Length: 229
Image (cartoon, rainbow, N blue to C red; front, top):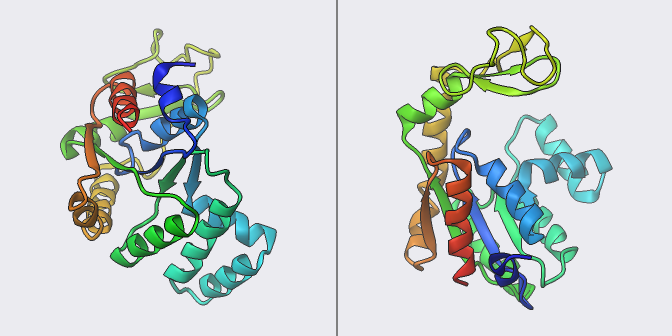
């Protein structure tokens, strides 16, 4: 185990919020932290779907709200977070994904952590250039057979029209990987983070990483931040 990994495995695991717009690589970096540091990623969207599928009390409540076409309340989301934290050992670090999204949820997170002997250690934002992100996302495509990923400018198949991994000639693009959708996502992301970033900035726990750098450089930057705890 690396020195950086050991730093995140004290008696109290690190608790972090990982922020970044769609396409910034947040999911990739969260997966690395889960694998390399043994952290647990809490994605509110995944947790909500799981609770509804499992027909838990909160899941049933959420289903009723969604069936009415209403937004899930802060109380339900915070309840899901609290239940998840109760199942995670104090020594295990947690990555919060998609929560908090409002000032009220930020206050709720503080309470949920404090009630369980935890604190919020870092808020890490993967900062991106919007135009460069549009290029990154709109240019990507994948093999329809095996899922291997490619890009119009940065990673074309070695043989034009033939997948390097499986030899298929069938490729696909996500229908929402277009400029209008990407710019709309960016605007939504700014709107969601605007209420919470000043709260954490005031505490001095926000760190920004160049999300347009290579995946390895981003991972190293995040590791440096977490290793300083």
